[in-house]
Image 1 (tube, rainbow, N blue to C red):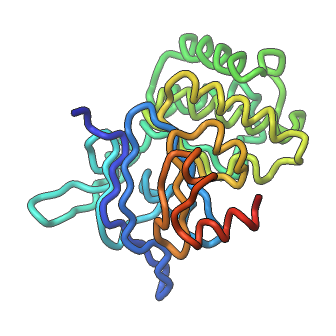
Image 2 (cartoon, rainbow, N blue to C red; image 1 turned 90 degrees about the vertical axis):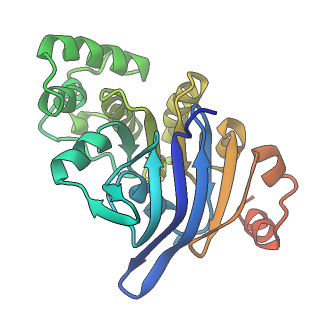
Length: 254
């Protein structure tokens, strides 16, 4: 059997005395789209940040493509990797945040090309061609030389997606990518995510867009109180949830 793209085992994370993740066990297969849903404060975004070691674990393990991202293991002992090795493994995981985090002094094209040139040390001309192709892919071929302040929120988020794809990641993480957008701009970002799903990209999305999760996800995970309450295919979880807490949540948001 092939190695899962993501394998989380008994993952726990605390901030001070507040336990945010309480023994999360999840597996994401290659090419699978998983949507994480649940109330605010349920640990969804924290779990996403743990996958690429933006947050350190207090207990448990997370492997991406069979490798620990932020640690090496000798027997039962975990050792945090040097920052350079963490950055190298993190570079294989694309992440799109709620806020776009674009460089305001760079054009869309420069934002997309920055990391492959600066981090991967790839040739500028080659990267520029690929960056142009990626911006066309997300529907921004006519905005290559626009600065972030000249772009709508939806356009900025599409640049952010192209920037993540420029590193040729094996896994894409989306942390509520539409939550900072005006309602009329949500659709254009979701369409890009929809296309990536159709192309077989492995993705984990934290989202409040229930209809979108039902449409694109191979698996939907409902989290509450730092735990996985229920995980199932969307047609099962949305129509015939097993747990009362899941039913209560869906009744409120739908």
